[in-house]
Image (cartoon, rainbow, N blue to C red; front, side, top):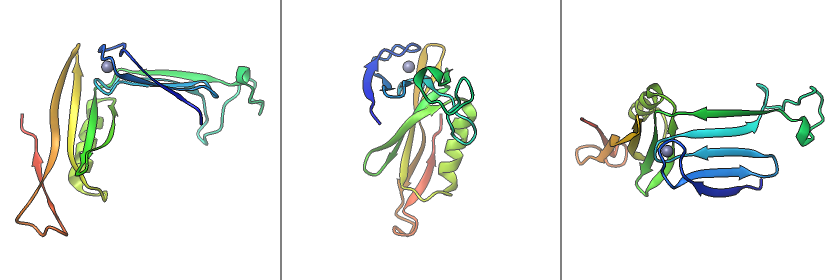
Length: 156
Ligand SMILES: [Zn+2]
C-alpha cells in the first residue's frame, strides 16, 4: 500500500525526527515519536471484525462515505528492543503498566526470542529519562546452547 514517510518535530517533546507515515490512497496518518513515545493516528474506523464502517451503513466505500477516527496518545514513554545483531524493534508504551508487562514478558521467557536489551525513554513533564530497563548477559556458567543468557535487572 502506498505511503509517504516523512519526519517532523514532535508536537510534545520537540524531537526533530518524529516520524509520520501517510497512506495517501486511504488517507490514514500515523505519527510516532521514538524519543518520547507520542502517538497520533488518523485512521479508517472499523468494526470488531475489521470491516470498514461507512457513514450510511452501506458497502459504498467511496472516500466521502468512510468514517475516520482520530487518536492522540500522550504515551508514558518509548522503547528500543535489541538482540545480538542490533535494534530489533521500537515502539511506545501508553502507560506504566504496559512497560511493566513488557519487562515481565521478557523475564518470563515465554516467548522464543533472542532479545538482549530493553532501553526505555520515560517522558515526564517535558523531561526524558533514559535508562536500560532490562538486560540479559551471556553466562559462562550455563549451558551455552540451551540457556545462553543470564538475566540482569536494572537497579536505579
Ligand atoms: Zn516526542
